[in-house]
Image 1 (cartoon, rainbow, N blue to C red):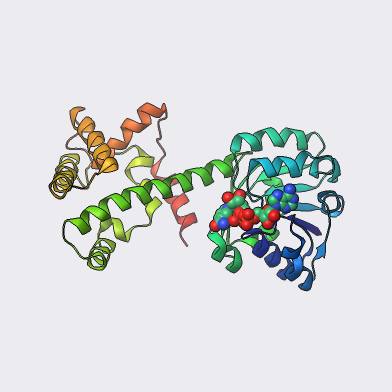
Image 2: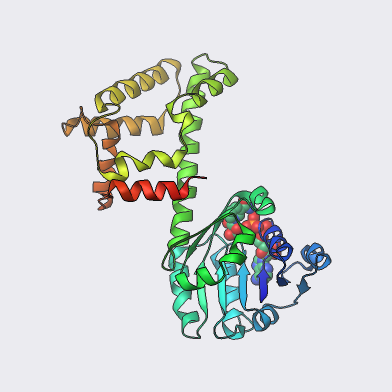
Length: 310
Ligand code: NAD
């Protein structure tokens, strides 16, 4: 099997090298030739155009900055669409738009080429060590066919669903990360301004309920199961706690935009008469606004959780 790899930057450089280390024949390309020196040294072949990668590869991987570069590489005169063989496959490891992936997919399918969006998560360190999640959207049979190659790139290659599903997962993951980051900056500056030494504060909160749980594990109980009773922590108590926090922030003069927003959510949920339900019930308000009702059965949630424990 010949593997093509286009885009040898911060992420792609290491991922391509790991595919080579797993024993595959790898043909590489980047706008910057010098990035490929270490790949050629490791036994990869340099191709000086996208077309030359396309014509020899059974499967192509790309790791490019974003939609603009992906479209160029796909649709240029000497691009993947015109050059790839029928029956071959293209996994795009870049972070891009699911809408754009859904537009690319049928154009490649019409030439019997399978296109899969396959964004990754784990940063440059994960790309180098292989501790990387790969979230794949597209045809499941193609995912399975190349699973061994994906496994040489990352230790958590997962099939998520039809084309675009991988990118949706990636955007949800990264949006969560940066929203949490903004919230943490807010509450932590409040804590420091209220008189607690930063390292002591960090040590304290890491040991708390929120500190001990993996961020997304918390979704598995009440929220995914639409199950708000019995309360493990009642809404009225959460409302009291967040009220005290915003009161403290006013006393010490720290703006708490996100925490005040969270308090408004809890207040609105209280006004629904939900005060004795579990505090996570406030998440239902967002489900209403989004026009989505999430209601999974407990056994399915447990099975999925067990699958993702590592
Ligand atoms: P990068 O800019 O270091 O690498 C992109 C590479 O693509 C560059 O080497 C560039 O020369 C090459 N390139 C651009 N246009 C090209 C073309 N037309 N033909 C051939 N090569 C071309 O970026 P990166 O940090 O490696 O990220 C790559 C992708 O992975 C991005 O979509 C990014 O959002 C995503 N990502 C990055 C990280 C991270 O921590 N850096 C983590 C997860 C996902």
